[in-house]
Image (cartoon, rainbow, N blue to C red; front, side, top):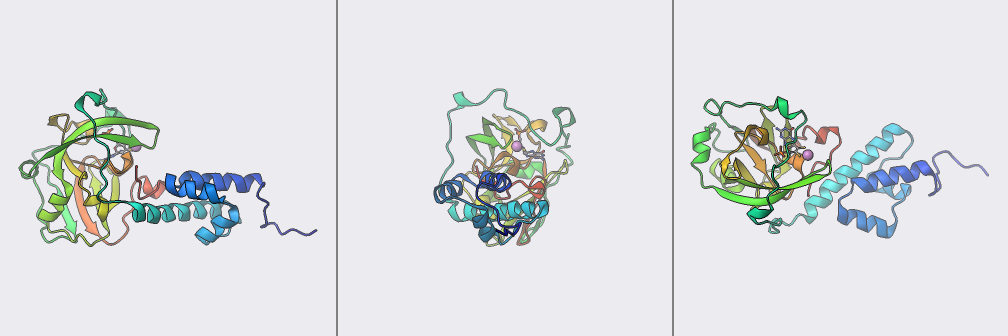
Length: 260
Ligand SMILES: Nc1nc2c(c(=O)[nH]1)N[C@H]1C(S)=C(S)[C@@H](COP(=O)(O)O)O[C@H]1N2
Ligand SMILES: [Mo]
Protein backbone atom coordinates (compact mmCIF):
# COMPACT_ATOMS: atom_id res chain seq x y z
CA UNK A 1 0.00 0.00 0.00
CA UNK A 2 1.26 3.53 -0.82
CA UNK A 3 2.48 5.40 2.23
CA UNK A 4 3.58 9.02 1.79
CA UNK A 5 7.02 9.79 3.23
CA UNK A 6 5.66 12.24 5.81
CA UNK A 7 3.51 9.60 7.48
CA UNK A 8 5.69 7.96 10.09
CA UNK A 9 4.72 5.20 12.43
CA UNK A 10 5.16 5.76 16.17
CA UNK A 11 7.99 3.23 16.15
CA UNK A 12 9.95 5.21 13.53
CA UNK A 13 13.32 5.69 15.30
CA UNK A 14 13.77 9.22 13.90
CA UNK A 15 10.30 10.26 15.12
CA UNK A 16 11.08 8.75 18.51
CA UNK A 17 14.35 10.69 18.71
CA UNK A 18 12.60 13.99 17.86
CA UNK A 19 9.90 13.37 20.47
CA UNK A 20 12.60 12.49 23.03
CA UNK A 21 14.47 15.75 22.27
CA UNK A 22 11.23 17.72 22.58
CA UNK A 23 10.44 16.08 25.93
CA UNK A 24 13.95 16.90 27.17
CA UNK A 25 13.25 20.56 26.32
CA UNK A 26 10.18 20.63 28.52
CA UNK A 27 10.06 21.68 32.15
CA UNK A 28 9.13 18.83 34.52
CA UNK A 29 5.38 19.57 34.91
CA UNK A 30 4.80 19.78 31.13
CA UNK A 31 6.94 16.68 30.58
CA UNK A 32 4.88 14.70 33.09
CA UNK A 33 1.67 15.77 31.34
CA UNK A 34 2.95 14.70 27.93
CA UNK A 35 4.43 11.45 29.24
CA UNK A 36 1.08 10.58 30.76
CA UNK A 37 -0.86 11.44 27.59
CA UNK A 38 1.80 10.08 25.25
CA UNK A 39 3.46 12.66 23.01
CA UNK A 40 3.66 11.66 19.34
CA UNK A 41 5.18 13.35 16.33
CA UNK A 42 1.64 14.23 15.26
CA UNK A 43 1.02 15.79 18.66
CA UNK A 44 4.20 17.83 18.37
CA UNK A 45 3.12 19.03 14.93
CA UNK A 46 -0.21 20.19 16.36
CA UNK A 47 1.47 21.84 19.33
CA UNK A 48 4.01 23.77 17.28
CA UNK A 49 2.28 24.19 13.94
CA UNK A 50 5.44 22.91 12.23
CA UNK A 51 5.44 19.88 9.91
CA UNK A 52 8.59 17.82 10.17
CA UNK A 53 10.00 17.33 6.69
CA UNK A 54 13.74 17.96 7.12
CA UNK A 55 16.43 18.72 9.70
CA UNK A 56 15.67 22.42 9.57
CA UNK A 57 12.04 21.81 10.54
CA UNK A 58 13.18 19.53 13.40
CA UNK A 59 15.07 22.59 14.67
CA UNK A 60 12.00 24.85 14.28
CA UNK A 61 9.86 22.30 16.15
CA UNK A 62 12.35 22.26 19.04
CA UNK A 63 12.49 26.09 19.04
CA UNK A 64 8.68 26.23 19.04
CA UNK A 65 8.60 23.73 21.95
CA UNK A 66 11.05 26.00 23.81
CA UNK A 67 8.80 29.08 23.21
CA UNK A 68 5.83 26.99 24.34
CA UNK A 69 7.79 26.12 27.49
CA UNK A 70 8.43 29.83 28.14
CA UNK A 71 4.67 30.39 28.15
CA UNK A 72 4.02 27.35 30.38
CA UNK A 73 6.72 28.39 32.86
CA UNK A 74 5.49 31.99 32.90
CA UNK A 75 1.94 30.75 33.52
CA UNK A 76 2.91 28.45 36.40
CA UNK A 77 5.49 30.84 37.95
CA UNK A 78 4.21 31.76 41.41
CA UNK A 79 5.69 35.15 42.39
CA UNK A 80 4.98 34.51 46.07
CA UNK A 81 6.68 31.10 46.18
CA UNK A 82 10.17 31.27 47.71
CA UNK A 83 13.10 29.07 46.68
CA UNK A 84 14.63 27.02 49.54
CA UNK A 85 17.23 28.73 51.74
CA UNK A 86 20.00 26.96 53.69
CA UNK A 87 22.11 27.41 56.82
CA UNK A 88 25.62 28.89 56.39
CA UNK A 89 27.06 25.47 57.29
CA UNK A 90 25.78 24.10 53.98
CA UNK A 91 27.61 26.65 51.78
CA UNK A 92 29.67 24.88 49.09
CA UNK A 93 33.38 25.67 49.55
CA UNK A 94 34.99 26.54 47.28
CA UNK A 95 32.00 27.78 45.29
CA UNK A 96 32.42 26.76 41.61
CA UNK A 97 33.30 29.27 38.88
CA UNK A 98 31.64 29.13 35.48
CA UNK A 99 31.55 31.35 32.39
CA UNK A 100 31.76 30.94 28.62
CA UNK A 101 35.57 31.21 29.07
CA UNK A 102 38.13 29.85 31.54
CA UNK A 103 38.88 31.22 35.01
CA UNK A 104 42.23 32.62 33.76
CA UNK A 105 40.27 35.02 31.52
CA UNK A 106 38.01 36.49 34.22
CA UNK A 107 37.25 40.17 33.49
CA UNK A 108 38.81 42.73 35.83
CA UNK A 109 36.39 45.66 36.13
CA UNK A 110 37.68 48.94 37.64
CA UNK A 111 35.28 49.63 40.53
CA UNK A 112 36.17 53.35 40.79
CA UNK A 113 35.46 54.01 37.10
CA UNK A 114 32.42 51.71 37.03
CA UNK A 115 29.03 53.19 36.10
CA UNK A 116 25.86 51.13 35.83
CA UNK A 117 23.79 52.33 32.86
CA UNK A 118 20.02 52.24 33.26
CA UNK A 119 17.73 52.65 30.29
CA UNK A 120 14.55 51.77 28.45
CA UNK A 121 11.21 52.16 30.22
CA UNK A 122 12.46 53.94 33.36
CA UNK A 123 11.90 57.47 34.67
CA UNK A 124 15.42 58.01 36.08
CA UNK A 125 18.23 57.30 33.62
CA UNK A 126 21.18 58.57 35.66
CA UNK A 127 24.01 56.02 35.78
CA UNK A 128 24.89 54.55 39.19
CA UNK A 129 28.29 54.50 40.87
CA UNK A 130 29.33 51.54 43.01
CA UNK A 131 29.20 53.75 46.14
CA UNK A 132 25.58 54.70 45.36
CA UNK A 133 24.63 51.04 44.92
CA UNK A 134 26.39 50.08 48.16
CA UNK A 135 24.45 52.80 50.01
CA UNK A 136 21.12 51.11 49.19
CA UNK A 137 19.51 48.77 51.77
CA UNK A 138 21.19 45.34 51.61
CA UNK A 139 19.92 41.81 52.25
CA UNK A 140 21.61 38.40 52.09
CA UNK A 141 20.48 34.97 50.92
CA UNK A 142 21.93 31.45 51.15
CA UNK A 143 20.46 29.63 48.17
CA UNK A 144 21.24 26.95 45.61
CA UNK A 145 22.63 27.85 42.20
CA UNK A 146 21.79 25.24 39.55
CA UNK A 147 23.77 25.12 36.29
CA UNK A 148 22.40 23.28 33.23
CA UNK A 149 25.83 21.71 32.80
CA UNK A 150 24.89 19.35 35.62
CA UNK A 151 26.22 20.85 38.84
CA UNK A 152 24.64 22.81 41.66
CA UNK A 153 26.12 24.60 44.67
CA UNK A 154 24.94 26.58 47.68
CA UNK A 155 26.28 30.11 48.05
CA UNK A 156 25.73 33.26 50.08
CA UNK A 157 25.03 36.47 48.19
CA UNK A 158 24.38 39.99 49.49
CA UNK A 159 22.89 43.00 47.76
CA UNK A 160 19.84 45.08 46.99
CA UNK A 161 16.41 43.50 46.40
CA UNK A 162 16.03 44.06 42.65
CA UNK A 163 12.39 45.16 43.07
CA UNK A 164 13.66 47.99 45.30
CA UNK A 165 16.20 49.03 42.65
CA UNK A 166 13.50 48.98 39.95
CA UNK A 167 11.31 51.15 42.18
CA UNK A 168 14.12 53.68 42.67
CA UNK A 169 14.79 54.04 38.95
CA UNK A 170 11.06 54.41 38.31
CA UNK A 171 10.83 51.33 36.12
CA UNK A 172 7.62 50.59 34.26
CA UNK A 173 6.88 47.30 36.03
CA UNK A 174 4.10 46.52 33.54
CA UNK A 175 6.81 46.07 30.88
CA UNK A 176 7.60 42.49 29.87
CA UNK A 177 11.38 42.20 30.11
CA UNK A 178 14.52 43.35 31.89
CA UNK A 179 17.66 43.08 29.78
CA UNK A 180 21.24 42.81 31.12
CA UNK A 181 24.54 43.60 29.34
CA UNK A 182 27.81 42.49 30.90
CA UNK A 183 31.44 43.65 30.82
CA UNK A 184 32.56 40.35 29.26
CA UNK A 185 30.08 40.56 26.36
CA UNK A 186 27.62 38.21 28.06
CA UNK A 187 23.95 39.09 27.84
CA UNK A 188 20.70 37.72 29.21
CA UNK A 189 17.17 38.91 29.95
CA UNK A 190 14.34 37.98 32.32
CA UNK A 191 10.57 38.30 32.66
CA UNK A 192 9.18 41.11 34.86
CA UNK A 193 7.44 38.81 37.41
CA UNK A 194 10.83 37.20 38.18
CA UNK A 195 12.52 40.63 38.26
CA UNK A 196 10.06 41.61 41.02
CA UNK A 197 10.38 38.30 42.95
CA UNK A 198 11.39 38.76 46.61
CA UNK A 199 14.60 36.71 46.19
CA UNK A 200 15.81 38.41 43.01
CA UNK A 201 18.86 40.36 44.14
CA UNK A 202 21.22 42.92 42.62
CA UNK A 203 24.28 41.36 44.18
CA UNK A 204 27.34 43.26 45.46
CA UNK A 205 28.89 40.77 47.89
CA UNK A 206 29.72 37.09 48.17
CA UNK A 207 29.99 35.29 51.54
CA UNK A 208 30.33 38.57 53.46
CA UNK A 209 33.06 40.10 51.26
CA UNK A 210 33.05 42.34 48.16
CA UNK A 211 31.91 40.25 45.17
CA UNK A 212 35.13 38.67 43.79
CA UNK A 213 35.98 39.15 40.08
CA UNK A 214 35.31 35.48 39.28
CA UNK A 215 31.78 35.70 40.67
CA UNK A 216 30.98 38.87 38.74
CA UNK A 217 32.53 42.02 40.32
CA UNK A 218 31.20 44.59 40.71
CA UNK A 219 27.60 43.56 40.18
CA UNK A 220 25.56 40.47 39.32
CA UNK A 221 21.92 39.47 39.42
CA UNK A 222 21.17 36.54 41.70
CA UNK A 223 17.91 34.60 41.22
CA UNK A 224 17.41 31.27 43.03
CA UNK A 225 14.28 30.74 40.89
CA UNK A 226 16.31 30.57 37.68
CA UNK A 227 19.09 28.42 36.21
CA UNK A 228 22.71 29.62 36.35
CA UNK A 229 22.88 31.07 32.83
CA UNK A 230 20.02 33.48 33.64
CA UNK A 231 22.14 35.03 36.47
CA UNK A 232 24.32 37.67 34.74
CA UNK A 233 27.72 38.59 36.25
CA UNK A 234 29.71 41.84 35.62
CA UNK A 235 26.51 43.77 34.77
CA UNK A 236 27.16 47.14 33.12
CA UNK A 237 23.72 48.00 31.73
CA UNK A 238 20.11 47.30 32.70
CA UNK A 239 17.24 48.06 30.34
CA UNK A 240 13.49 47.68 30.81
CA UNK A 241 11.75 46.80 27.55
CA UNK A 242 8.77 45.23 25.81
CA UNK A 243 10.91 43.93 22.95
CA UNK A 244 12.15 40.32 23.41
CA UNK A 245 15.87 40.71 24.18
CA UNK A 246 17.10 37.06 24.04
CA UNK A 247 20.53 36.28 25.48
CA UNK A 248 23.97 34.76 24.87
CA UNK A 249 22.95 31.12 25.47
CA UNK A 250 19.24 31.68 24.79
CA UNK A 251 20.07 32.72 21.19
CA UNK A 252 21.90 29.39 20.84
CA UNK A 253 18.87 27.33 21.87
CA UNK A 254 18.79 27.42 25.69
CA UNK A 255 15.25 27.84 26.99
CA UNK A 256 14.61 31.58 27.56
CA UNK A 257 12.52 31.41 30.77
CA UNK A 258 15.15 29.14 32.33
CA UNK A 259 13.31 28.36 35.57
CA UNK A 260 15.10 26.16 38.10
N1 LIG B 1 28.81 37.83 32.56
C1 LIG B 1 28.59 36.50 32.62
N2 LIG B 1 27.64 36.04 33.44
C2 LIG B 1 27.39 34.71 33.51
C3 LIG B 1 28.11 33.79 32.71
C4 LIG B 1 29.11 34.31 31.85
O1 LIG B 1 29.81 33.58 31.10
N3 LIG B 1 29.33 35.67 31.84
N4 LIG B 1 27.85 32.43 32.82
C5 LIG B 1 26.58 32.01 33.45
C6 LIG B 1 26.56 30.62 33.88
S1 LIG B 1 26.27 29.44 32.67
C7 LIG B 1 26.69 30.25 35.20
S2 LIG B 1 26.49 28.63 35.71
C8 LIG B 1 26.97 31.25 36.25
C9 LIG B 1 28.20 30.87 37.07
O2 LIG B 1 28.36 31.76 38.14
P1 LIG B 1 29.52 31.54 39.22
O3 LIG B 1 30.85 31.76 38.52
O4 LIG B 1 29.24 32.53 40.28
O5 LIG B 1 29.40 30.11 39.70
O6 LIG B 1 27.16 32.56 35.69
C10 LIG B 1 26.27 32.88 34.67
N5 LIG B 1 26.44 34.29 34.37
MO1 LIG C 1 25.59 27.57 33.86
